[in-house]
Image (cartoon, rainbow, N blue to C red; front, top):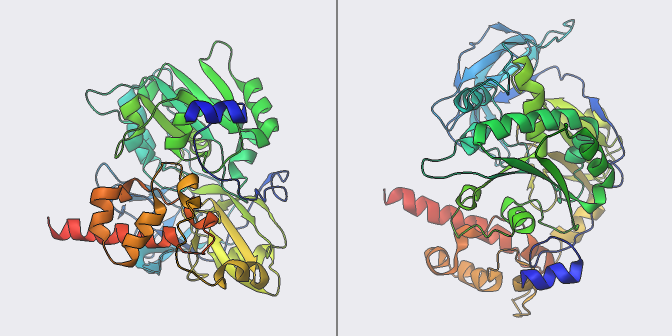
Length: 452
């Protein structure tokens, strides 16, 4: 099937998938700009998969921009750094994107501060050991900036008995509206190359492949021009298709390797890192800096001053929307992209390390999807044709409706679903399949924890 698809499309790709409207034209040509500091920054202790960080700064402390204010709690955890010079007014619960309350620093920036960033000891990619690089990445607080928020150092530590021959740098950015990675590749190609040098050293991979979709030809050219002489790095152009940026799909497209059910890229001798994460490593590690801000696309029909902005971690949605301006009929704000993002339950939610976009919709745009009447499944098979990992979303949906969640996991590979939303997008009956699967997966995991 994969070979047939490759012949029809004329390039490296994966089977199935969809082609939603890209909606990138309004921001892909806009250079990255520094965003102003909010009068109050809310910096959660949990901005990553794994244990929350342990605070080292206390209420009333004065901190400097870039200063470490929380330490990792174990291996699957990362440090947190101050996004601005200011005073820690309090450490208290704050809402996250899912509406849950989690501990956070409430940091008030100094109004007259120059906001210079604290630098630390530089790390050399050529002389540092893999263990030193991995430890430094954890101390720098770097997590995957593509949205998942998995600690980067944990991904890079190759398990005993495994080996990696290829480093895949993910610059596909297939999610509609989002153009952060596109701009980073254009404006910070040298940082990408520096980051790759650390990643190759850390993983032991012999060469790197940067994957870019065909709608970013300018970025492809910029990256190719930036490859250092003699470096084992190449740039591959892929056909535009969603969800090309999912690491399983990307590795299939580039390397023709199939990650097994429940497996990871390292099982097929590869490691996949987002291009934005790679650029941040290339920027942070040579200067001994911790991650305290990130590039985010702010766009959508309801945003007036659309663009790509380098925004301090902890900036609230409310401050962002007030700064860029919104249409009067603002209705819905999504953190991330419209396919895999999450609708914000509050405007007091802060930007965290894994935030890729703030996409706002008017009431008329939102109504197109939220007001559609749901009908019974007609067994058309569209969802089966769309699913990139060849699940049967129709069957899973019927099981979810009857509460048979464990059966979905045991017999129909529910936990392989990475919630790309392709099935929901194509369903003519408007069944919220991916939402049903999220509920089912949460139920299965809760049952597993209860069972010990």
